[in-house]
Image (tube, rainbow, N blue to C red):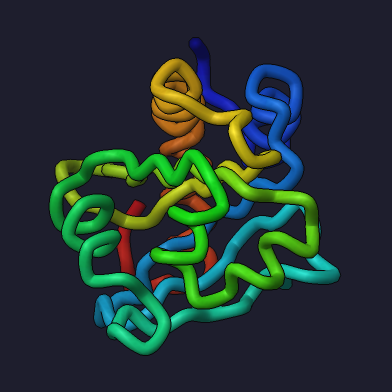
Length: 155
């Protein structure tokens, strides 16, 4: 698959995964927060929104798996979404009850994640493989978006 823009990634995710919401987040240069650089529903999940990478806003298990471990996370049902995401009520209000988060790895470093959300039961291991493929194709676009908002990081 060739390189994709963030909007092309979201369009492909809607078509291939049935995604209702796609967001792209990048790590701040100090690694203390993630900042949203793309959202298919900006009225609910605004570009520029931030979340601290501490236990009050981010699951340590999720951090260990996605950010540190560079492995995708699958929350296939509402129970998993509720367990791992403090904003689960907002997620559910959009009709989402399943999520795949894929790490964006650039030059060996985790620089962010792409978050694919759909109806409960709509995402599985095959969906994870598709999400990983889409993320790989969007890595350059994510790196460029991160460098744009945080010029101190290199692409």
